[in-house]
Length: 108
Image 1: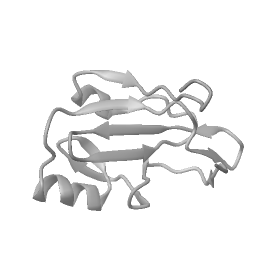
Image 2: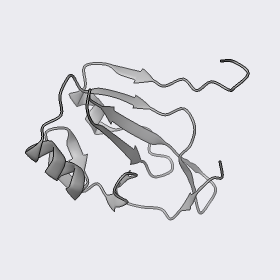
Image 3: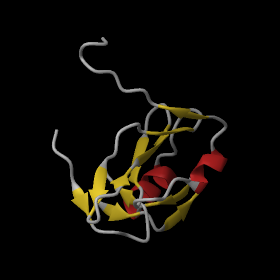
Image 4: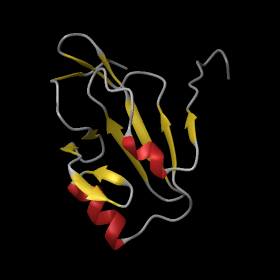
């Protein structure tokens, strides 16, 4: 899988809808489409969060941009963070923050 290069941004970026996450919701800042989904079809189950272990993209200066994920039983929001942004305020809304572990084909 090739890497993506993105310009530096002020906001996190919704990977599903390719939009700035600049709308307030009960889960924190999300993109307009995710906000609409949260309010019209509230997600089921507890909110869980995690940072994905591999960069989702690289900034134009070569720094890695990581993905923060909000997970419910029936809905998921994947957010690309600007390079150097190592904290997501939405983690305070989730009871438990975990890390996704990626395995290679040899480890499975």
